[in-house]
Amino acid sequence: MRQILALILALLMAAPAAAQGIPATMQGVEARKLFGAVSTGSPHRADAFGSYAKGCGAGLVQLPENGATWQAMRLSRNRNWGTPELVDYLQDLSKDAARLPGWNGIYVGDMSQPRGGPMSSGHASHQIGLDADIWMLPGTDLRLSRNARENLSSISLRRGNGAYVNGNWTAQHMELLKAAASDRRVARIFLFPGAKAWMCDNATGDRRWLRKIRPWWGHHYHFHVRLSCPRGMKGCVDQAPPPPGDGCDEARKWVSDIVNPPPPDPNAPAPTPRRQLTMEDLPRQCVTVLQSR
Ligand SMILES: [Zn+2]
Image (cartoon, rainbow, N blue to C red; front, side):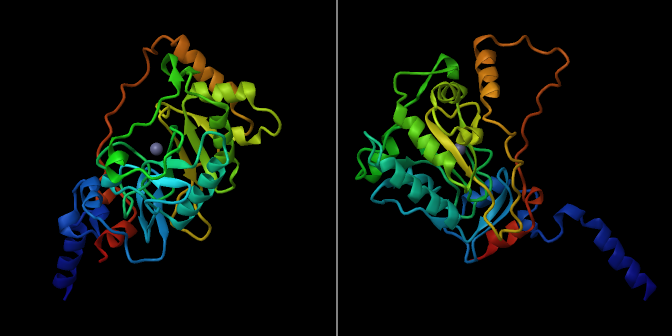
């Protein structure tokens, strides 16, 4: 009896703790390959597990490819999935956009894969159905063909490597960003620093919405909206809120660092290359999300 117990104990110890509950076929496999191979949502109540850059989504739903005031772009990628909260939010924002001069709605870029998770290309986040990219190109033609949606390009709004806006920038872009950031469901919006600095200089009236607009690299062909974890999604990990205030000093610092790059810090540690996530890195619920038919 004691020998049997010892044997069982030895077997349990032999399985690495991190791999427990993960089928052998999934152990050590890059999660982006597993999530990228699934083309439909999971048959669960909508839920987000983990964090924006390390997680997955159950019961995600599709933003319909076409709406009166939006179109989902790059349909071949099958990344127009999100929590119901994200889909509602995008539809609401698209109505705000349709009221702006020169806009009939929005073009929506990447959201999440059908079950969230890491992607094979393009993003570290967008993993739990709460992130979406909105094109800077005004949505004028909302009857684009599938083919046009593969080939049309957005427009860049940046000049000077992101320190300034260019001639494509309009006051309507600020109005859209203001509407996007003023929504209580939003946690953060990522945008190139020159655009935030422009809005810091030009926004009048209530400026509290500026706090949620965060300067970031890239993000000049689209802006990136990130929603907070919806109420009741207990496995969803929120990011810390942005620091208090409008964040304009921070945006100006980004701009000045682009214009006059600080000398490299000789003591800075070498950047570690980013490792591809495996199923062991994700919340254990993601195994169930992935396996369900
Ligand atoms: Zn994004």
